[in-house]
Amino acid sequence: MEQTVTQSGIRAHGTSQIEIKSHYPFGSQRKTRYYLQLYLVIPRQLGVATDVNGQHALLDRIRSNTRFQVANISMAQLGNPDAQGNPIGRIRNEILEPRQPGRPKIRRINYEIRTFCNLYVAQLKTAVRLIKIALQQKKQIADGVLTTRNFVRDSRKTLNLFRDQRQILLDPAVPDSIRTAFDQADEYLGGQIIRYLLTLSEVVAAADPENKLVGQIRKSTEKEIEYQKQIGYTSIREISSGQELEALVNRESRLKKWVQSTLYLNTEESGTPRRIGHIVASVAAATAMAIAVTAAFFADRLFVSYSLPWALLIVGSYILKDRIKEILRGILVRYVPSVISDRTRILIDPAVGKTVGRVRLAIRNGDPTAVPFLADSVNDESTLVISNAVTLKGRALSSAHQRVNGIVDITRIRIDQWLPNMDAPRKLIRIIKNGEAGAMLAPRTYRVRMVLLLSQDSQTPVERQDWWAVLNRNGIVRIEQANINRR
Image 1 (cartoon, rainbow, N blue to C red):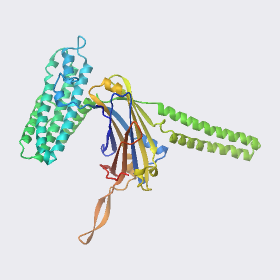
Image 2: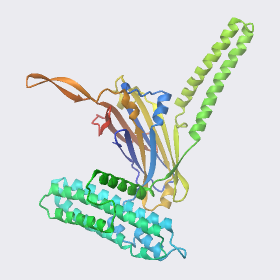
Image 3: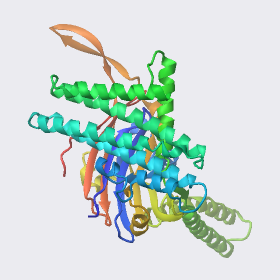
């Protein structure tokens, strides 16, 4: 059954970036369209301009990337090499029975190795999230413990099956680069399963401290750590200094990026918005010039050449020409928003080298009085609207990929340019405590309201989310969902 519902959320990426992550499923339709609108209601003190220059300044601080969303393939399927699309089965077939005589296809095997990692880690994340929910509810503790026990068993079994493929890599026909890729994947998976086993150990201990499963999980974790040490992987070892901890984080980050590199789509920036912008500017300039030339004709007919009135009319017409050009350009941009986008990214599937979609981004000045859910905005706030229009070629994507079911679009907005306009992050206030006057330092923050609207194939919102970005002069303090009455 095809998915037709988008999912989106907002979080902080560090202290200076707001991240919007949206999941867009694609089915077997020829084209699927999604629309996302983010309303930012910003205190005017932060100095965020809403005119054309302010919109372009914000555009320069927006970065986006797009990757595939892996399908939900169970641990049982991952542990069955004979299952359709199983990466382990494809690795074995390519090495033991290559499609062409001679050396195995390096690129294809490396791709399958990293695909297994992505599918395996996706199952770890999903299973641990569901187990945490079950164990937090007292009525489901027994079911949660049983699910945890089965999950630990199945995840270890599947990981051991993957590691067993090391034997077939000893064939002299297998290039060293494949063995290196396998070792990197093994190191990455070991670090991930240790991370999630430790999380499960804490969750089970909090729900049922006396349960024997806690000890079993910890033994499984220690066994994995010992395996990592014996192999000599650098990502798992006893940390004895800050530099070793720094090296550990750096190594895990590099391995993660290497594994996930197979998921990212290639992007090219389309020149269409720039060309349309040139056409709009040309039309505005031509209209303004026509008005100036017409004024010059009238000056020649009404006044003696080179007289004072003639000169004043000529100079005045050229002064107005530039203003008329900017006004006309603003009007055209405002009333043709469906044609003009500020940035258009062409999505290219690296597996087939073809265009599979487009993402059109536009930034506009918002009018709170025209939007019902922003009617409570105050006069000292500015409103900007960031729009994303996503078009996916579902039929082309679904026919080329069996193990992905959508794309994830990640947009990050840098807010560091807002910070210099803020006051000190703490303010001394006077209080009365126990009947006596005193003073204390109170945190000073600024709130940016964010309203996220999602829709599919029409402009009618199917989902609305309300968020607050709480900021101070040091950056993002937190991002939280707002409890605002829907209107």
